Length: 498
Image (cartoon, rainbow, N blue to C red; front, side):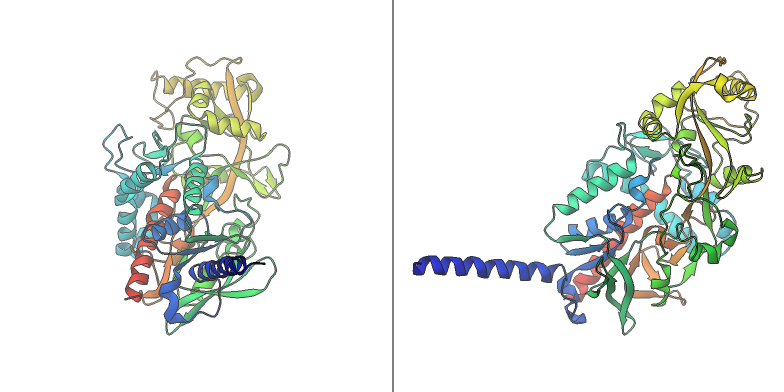
């Protein structure tokens, strides 16, 4: 072999090793990095739902390397399943002047506002005042279609945005951000990796301990943004501890432990842990009605004009808050105890179908909804639907004081009229409680002071929604506080490196 060829091979091997070394350094693969080297390594994001992806996107925009750890086998969290949309006001897609978002959120929070009032008001102000910018970021910077606006329960005006196409908003947003992040050479995602401990030295968070499929514990060093989601699927752990009355309820969340204890171990303060949102409409799958895991019937179905029936009769204004609709359902006798569930008919006409076609076609494909006629629903249902249609047509006032019927189009229902229907039941859906954060997404300790090197965003945090979360505000919370956490963490790293 010639001397030139030997030198060439040596050079290629050397640069390959050097490239691998630099990559591992940049993504903080080595567990024995000193704390003072944190600024060189970038940030750690825990959780790949929209909050984590928004934080990672902001960090990348500041040229900060990101190592993202996700305990599930696939990224996206619950955010990727979100189907109603994301709130924003005012935006270019709204046809009315919307100045009530803050007031609607405070009203929805309810009695929780009586404690830590100033703190909650600041969080809600940050959420609502940043909502227009959040929509603009997704639309103008990320190229996501959010041009269609609907009014959901508890909202004074239509402000919940989703795309005009067939793709649900959660999937559209999450998949777009993931694609963008994966194109960055300074972003590294690891799935099936569970954080087991938050590392701390001298009252400063310095990294995490984690284990992947092989069970071997490793350490990763750097400042941490925690966005690991809520505890709605922790039926035998945190949910049982804080809301034992919800034992036996089905859930939309995969069964997994809540992660708040990892943060309280380093001094984080908790808030509203007993405030758990039971969503009024999770589908009862006819093929497996006793499954404790339910698929959510998106609130947009009611927002676009759908109605709810128990024993063939309406019982509430379908545009009430999730809490009020749920309370009206559970005030009646359950039809099953294992799991504890009710039989509520969700009924839509052709007008609602056309307005939410992508959702309904998917539910039909999954066997959760079906196309039928009113005659199939029973005699009482015909009378209820006729009264509802009359109110929707403006012929009479609605007996439940509903004034917005959106796309309901059926004006003269008969037994042969086509409808779309599915059975729904209340389900544990969202946990409003979690660790206390500032309006800068800093995780706070029991004295209300920030824990240096630690931020939180999304459902792992508490205090933003109070007693009831408005539909469409979950994705918004993830974007607003996820981006804030990313910006704050980037500033922390840059200041540390000076």
